Image (cartoon, rainbow, N blue to C red; front, side):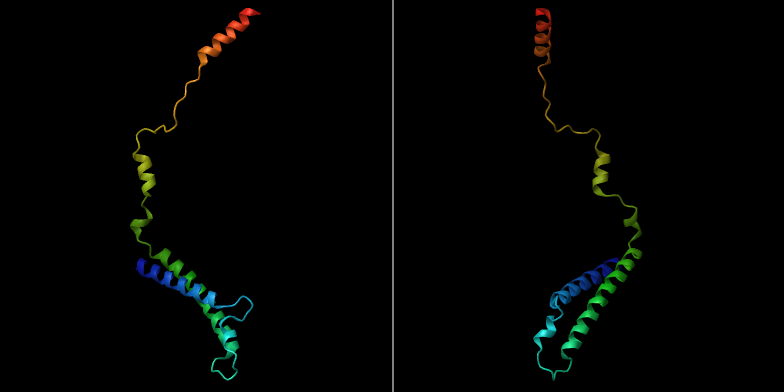
Length: 118
């Protein structure tokens, strides 16, 4: 059931994207291609249809998202991510930084030589 709802959401998203791309930002869009006045739908009805279709698909995506949450398989809810499982399986952290030893002995000898000279 979850896969079916997810498929419906994907189809609704694709259709919504196509409908939005057909529309013109200035209000013309697909309707501007039909210039004759004797058509069955007419210019104004085409823009009304596209606007209603946009709101319908947006609402359908919202409703289907809530339905998808309700039909999530119960074994998916309590499952942990693979990354968390791998982090828990690590017994000792791996040090990837190279270790550098500072020449502390030379600095200490130089400091004692300077103090002794004073």
